[in-house]
Image (tube, rainbow, N blue to C red; front, side, top):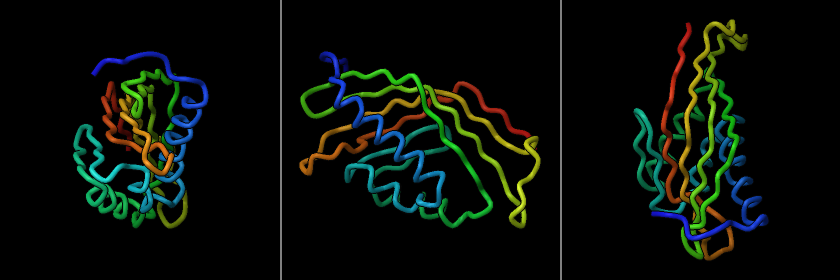
Length: 148
């Protein structure tokens, strides 16, 4: 799929809000609601990740929500917007994810964290209710550093 033209500023802001909402939910105890940000047959793909449909996404992120030892922060930057058609856009961003473990409520030394850096290629579509939702998210990992 190639882009068909520029994405207007208002749409860019709405797409950025969706990207930020995903990161916030994943990182702040709301992972069990991440599936709401996807269309019914949406998908997530990446190294070791393959989720198809809201049901699988809900199941995976519900497990994440139960893991109270894992702490993460998802960061994105440098968005590149492409209009695919009247109802969908592709957004490519540089992403960093920091993953850390806590023991008994105490944060472990930073030396025990994982850093993942790569690109996220997201296809996002405008739904009948006027909201933007992910059709697909693909993580392309450039490097991963695990310490710990």
